[in-house]
Length: 181
Image (cartoon, rainbow, N blue to C red; front, top):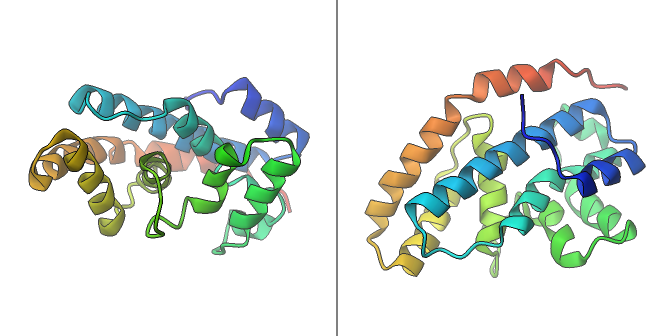
């Protein structure tokens, strides 16, 4: 069973009429983000992360698919700015809403570690690995902790491999919710 969404997020998703499949996806990515946060805290305790922001960001990153339901089953990026706008319209602080806009844009200048972790959770939940994204996370952690990049990468790879092993079950759970069209 996936991690329960924070009440604040569950209420927002209910207000916008999010499809059950979208809610399931957000639960799964949120759960993986929680696992990532725990691993970062255990392995690199010197890394300061706004855990509440990561949890909120992971739980809302794809909310724009409410306005672009075709992107529930197909490719597209229209949901990203739409999700940011929707959250802001609902009264969410733009600093919290940013994850909807940035979760697929990890290469932009000024991206925070929190945003990178949300992006990483959105990939690894289905066991997809993105070398550039992982390199950015590795670099941030290595810099903060004064470690060699390769040391951090080996540990991060171990964490992501372990999380990826649960992808089949997560994909099956998400697929059990039909897309209402």
